[in-house]
Amino acid sequence: MSAPQSRGPRPPGLPQGAARGRPQEAARETSDTERIRAQALALGFAACGFTGVERLPHGAAFQQWIDAGMAGSMDYLRRTRHQRADPRALLASARAAIVVAATYSRAESPILAQGRPQGAVARFAHGEDYHRVLKRRLAQLAEWINEHLDAAAELRAAVDTAPLFERELAMAAGLGFIGKNTLLISPGLGSFTVLGVLLTSQALVPDRPARARCGRCTLCLRACPTTALVGPYQLDARRCISYLTIEQREPVDPALRGALGRWAFGCDLCQEVCPYNRPTPRSRALAPDPALAPHDPLTTLDLAATAALTSAGYRRLVAGRALARAPRRCLQRNAALSAGNHPAVSPALDAALAALCQPEAAPLARQAALWAIGAREARGLVARPEPTGPSLDAVAGSGDDPMIPPGSAPAIP
Image (cartoon, rainbow, N blue to C red):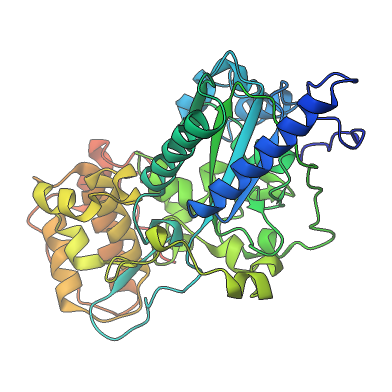
């Protein structure tokens, strides 16, 4: 998707929606805006900006992206595509959008540490579920607005799950620009942020929109191992590791399995190479949000333990975490694929994969385990055990993995 166009300059001191000749009202709106910003920062947000709620000019590009099939199986994006460009579809009385950002840790996961093989987890999922954190704070901000500024103000919070162009609103509110990796990049903060929006019926002074600042850099495009970034500002979700390990409920294309590497939930590669994520004086001074800080040992997934997850174990693992977005069978699939790419010799891991080949295992996880066993055997990491469940060819012929034809060997990275 292409980066949004910046709006033209507005006369200084004239807030959006304010009439000329009403300086007292303009002054009040300016005061309310800055008080809200200060309160948002006091609640723990790293940044806060404001923009109007006119219909956003991104609907056509989004529709083209949907029509090209790049949304994969995310049908909810298709169903809500007409609502996303107009924030007033969520709150009819909305006159402004308050956009906030919280930062999470940039620290790397110790996936190469000694001990049991680990799968990598995207950094946003290292701490408490950001949906809960941001919704809680936005509720506190809304309560403060009603108590201190406008008791009659109508407000509605949105964090990621509502049909809203949050990144585009954040860019319009001056929080940052949308990079070639399609993520919001905030100069001084980088892209390791999560966003929230509070729609309000109040008239507030908009901030100056941010402008794209990627220049000629293409590091993110070159870093993607699955070539999901098919061009600047354009992501084919069907090839994106984050989509494949979080959103997709079907088998992963064998041609992409080796490229997943050791990612077991999400991916940060296009962020890790971004120059805007290099340490800056501002980022050094601003510690990651405590609520989103890593909770050891939850920065990685023990591959053997994840492959062997019971229903009760899954509930304990994902409680209060963004990991809950992936069902148990998908986490087991991811763990198996990560194991197939892991270089370590590990009898415990091989035993867990063999157990996952049993008939009672979820077909999605079982076919991934069969692929992983074949991949590890081909690399000389283990003598392939004989599973008591169906063979690879049997699974292929049964329809459990429609992407592997009967009689074919698993794809080896």
